Image 1 (cartoon, rainbow, N blue to C red):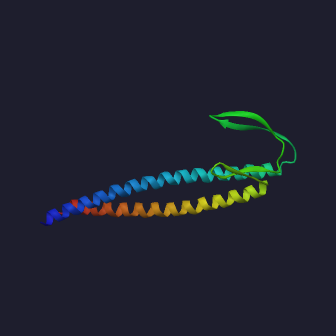
Image 2 (image 1 turned 120 degrees about the horizontal axis):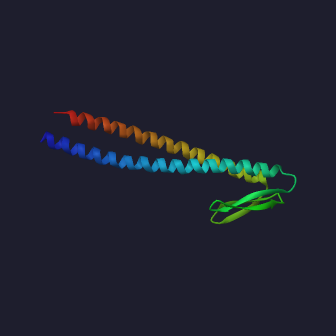
Image 3 (image 1 turned 45 degrees about the vertical axis):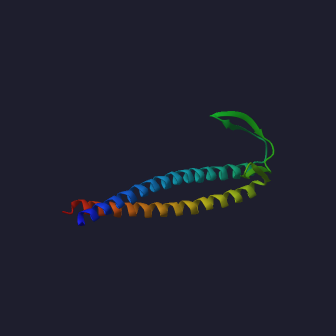
Amino acid sequence: MERSRVSQQIQQLIERYSFLEELARQLEERLKLLETLYNELTTTISVVEEIGKMDSERDTLVPIGSSVYVFARIKEVDKVLLGVGANVFLEKKPEEAVEHLMVRRNEVVKELGNLRNQLSSVLGELEKIRGILQSLSRAP
C-alpha cells in the first residue's frame, strides 16, 4: 500500500513538473518579447529626440520592410505621428511623443520585473520538485 501511495505521489509531482516547465518556457518567451519591445522603445525615444532637435531639412533612409529602404527628406520636424493602437495615430510634438513612449517603456519595465519574479518562483518550485523526486527515487 505504501509503495502505491509513493508511486501516485511521484506521478503527481511529474505532472506538476511538466506543467511548470511549460509555464517557465512561456514566461521566457514573453520576457524575450518584452525585452525586444523595451529595446525598440528605447531606440525610438532616441530617434524622436534627435528628430526634435533638427532645425533644417535632412536626408534619411526610411525602412519600408524586408530590409528595403527608400531615400527620403525630413522637412517638418515639429510633429510626429504616434501610434496609440488599433491603427489609430495621433499627431504630436516630438517632446510629447517622447513622454508617451517613456510611459510605455516604464510599463514594459514593470511587466519585465513581474515576469522575472514569476519565472524565478516557477524555477524555484521546479528545483524543489526535482529534489523531492530525487529523494523519492532513492527511497527503498
